[in-house]
Image (cartoon, rainbow, N blue to C red; front, side, top):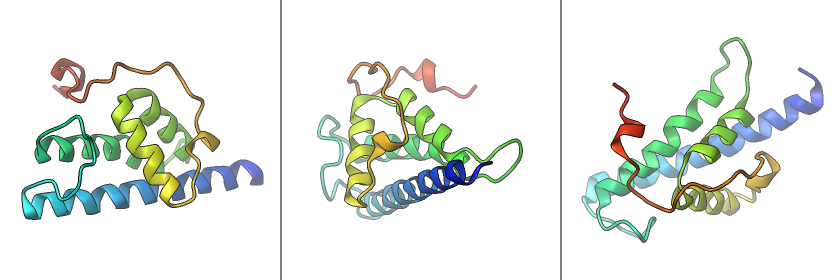
Length: 128
């Protein structure tokens, strides 16, 4: 991997680490108090649904941090997360990274948006 590409991948890995860490802190807080201490997704009225939406974001970001072969590609994980999440999750990711002075558009190519629904079809997310 060329030095420039490696720096870009490392910056994307830092972005992933910030997003996952912030999501875990929010998930832990909601799980402890069993309510929404703040409104993360205004369209959702249940803290458990907010936990699911945050965990859903983390689930697709974490593989980008693996150093296993064939390649270390945090940028790909950010792009896949962006492409596969709804508008509300995209907004959370963008705003969260902005709090850390990270511009998400430095890593992703914007693609057509999914419908702005918070609860995805279960068939799309069912791992079975």
